[in-house]
Image (cartoon, rainbow, N blue to C red):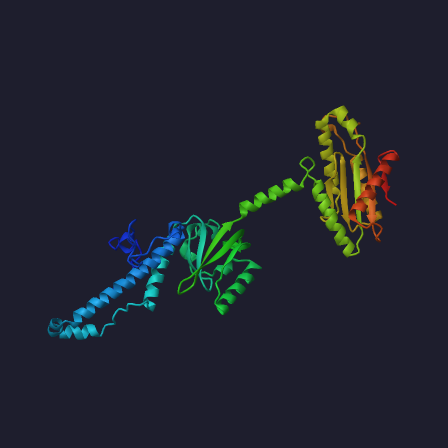
Length: 412
């Protein structure tokens, strides 16, 4: 009986690809019907489809060879001369199992072995991080890129990873989710596969890595699953950088207007639900246009940065937000602060800004800058929306300026 070709690197004297599955532009392979016409979809196949087609063709050819050998042996045993001369040999041969012209369990095993050999060779050549695991999550095959990824580049060999459970690398909640999918697959006999999802992996020596992975089902007599892993470290670093650029004022490094508006909506809703007070403070630099006209816009930018640094370091908690609201205006969101607490905060900021010196900018020591501030506080449902609270703080700011500047005014 013929067998499927062994692994191509074991014996280069075995039949080639063209011997097993001959290809000719004018003919079809022997497993196909001689009258079959080429279909349009056969002309457009992916490499994966071509591989599966080759494997099916090879299996069909082996089964046909088994049929031919079986028929030849039957004809030889029916010959009278052969029976007369080789009775001892016939008795021995008759005890051997006859090849079956139909698919058998051994055919499936041979097919799976050939498939696994080709799949393992393919995985070894891939530049992607790929694992092949069985139904229990045990790693059966691994690419060199996946070895480097899971070992954090510490030179671990693939043999040290083969046989380990894939889910042991997962962190919660993905680890529990994967185990649930595995249990469902074993109980319901459904295919375990899903589109890419983000997860955190626990690597050698406790390192952590953010990745995206997907699972694809490989239909063999013993199910296998291909897992493709993509490192998200660079992607997430770029995302954080882009988010910082999109949410931060590039000159003062405070939050920009977009972040301020979004934070006001969220903090207003949270404080309203929990019946906590919330305050807004708007800060405006007094006579800043005159400062720019007298000392120049470059020195004006440095002045904005020094004042923004004082405001940022005055925030009492991470829940509070400081933003550049306009050209020379800043705004604070103080969740949990009532009017009295917000006024104390404003007085501290006023004192710190009045004490700033600008000699490091080449200006005289007598040069000082002051600010005016308006405060609005929501305590017992006085304002219906966060926008109304903001408008009240803005009105209080203009009253502070009208009173002579370098003032703090609290909304009624």
